[in-house]
Length: 83
Image (cartoon, rainbow, N blue to C red):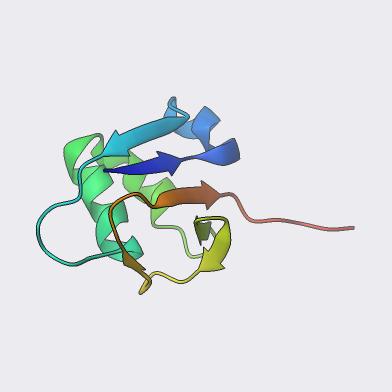
């Protein structure tokens, strides 16, 4: 099982976290995003698949090709702006 946190995009999705059992196949962040969209809400695709969404696994920023394993904590963050 993995835990997925949605940080500030939770307001757009209407949910702040999910607990998911990973499918048997090897899972990457990219595949996980598609899996979440497939099982929960197709309308989430625009939010989760946006190029500027930041992904972190176990509190470390990663790219979409990062491999996941049981027990990981995955977080999706909106883009950060500065000033």
